[in-house]
Amino acid sequence: MLTVGMDIGSSSVKVALMRHDPSGKGETELVGLEHERYRKRNPRQVVERAFERVLAAAKVSAADVKYVATTGEGELAPRKDGHFFGMTTHARGATWLDKRARSVLDIGALHARAMRIDERGRVLAYRMTSQCASGTGQFLENISRYLGVAIEDAGPLSLQAKQMEPVSSICAVLAETDIINMVARGIPAPQIFKGIHDSVAGRLTKLLKAAKAEGPIVVTGGMAANVGLLDAIRTRLAADNMQMEVIAPAHPEYAGAIGAAIWGAYRVKKLGTVPAIDETQITPERGPTTDEHEDEPSIKVRAPTKEDLPQLTQIDQAWTGKERGSYLESRLKRAMRPSGISLARVAELHGEIVGFLFGEVTWGEFGRVDGAAWVDTVGVSRKHLRAGVGSALLADFVRHAEILGVSSVRTLLEPENEDLTEFLQQHAFSVAKTRVVERPLR
Image (tube, rainbow, N blue to C red; front, side, top):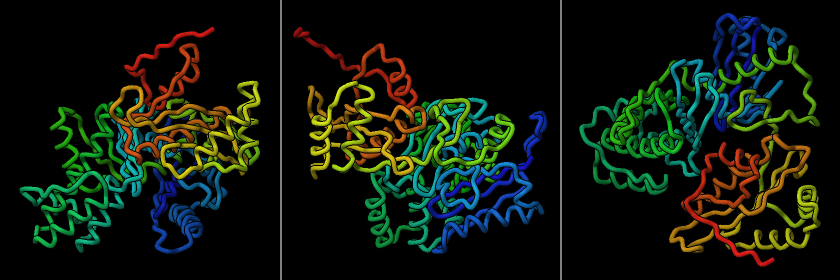
């Protein structure tokens, strides 16, 4: 049985063609790989061309492929039978590349993420970088271009340096300013690259610690080929007493595509046949720690508008049993003020609002000396439960909170609300040390 996995990113597409033993007793074989950048071309045409090339190289036709699975920007695929979370595809791909993997460090062009996994590639915990580019492959590529060095030469160059020139790890803009000043002072490129790799490694090891990573760690993404960065990561881990093996497997940039192809085969085996895609049907998604990893609906998260109020009220009333239009209207008005301290987001699926989240950012309240982001009101359409709506809203809220520089995201919930407790624990929430006290008035 043949399946294709396509990891469609912001600048390129990776395609993996896999052959599977239908009985499940034999090995899964990698048949072909293709990687192509968009380079100002139509991304959809590039994806289609890469798909056709991997089939042509293996001398098979599209009719021979049982399942086409995508991850990333799946809407660019010419053919798609199912779409899967990037986190789960990279985790599964990493375990195929090296069965010893117990953590994955995926360093992509625009973000990086650390995942702790089990022997089956199931995600147990994860952390992602914020929207700052200073811990990503694109940042390293930009710096290499500025210094006139090919990105593949940056790693070996940094290993030549006996000392490093420290670079800001706070943000990409400050780091680039540092590097401009270094060039003006005549600092050699090897020392600059060593400092850059140390700075990026510092951000990445923080992700690994936050995810409670265990070894061995398999590095995926194009940056896994950067020997200087890998050396810096190992040095940082050793300095933090995290004695774990860091593995750069063969074909690390294809981990997402390989994982998607494997999950596609799992789906075929589970269902027996490939169902026709019906955009009106949503296959349930149980979040990042489930065994099944079903299709991920294409959920769009955006800022709310006043026109959204009727749909938000309807979703809220289905859960509370009360018409709270006035309350939600006041929250919308507050959220749309240009104050930067109120966070409100809505989730859309096929043009329909399927969820919302309201929150606040507080500075110094409740005796705290630092800032915190609070989630106070959440609603998800009943017919779209377990479709990944809550996860998408929460992930977007956390990203915005990180940009504002707060130290934590918090919420309050009743102890007996076990479903919500489990959901938050899956997204790295834990019980805070703060004690809530109250005085009943009736």
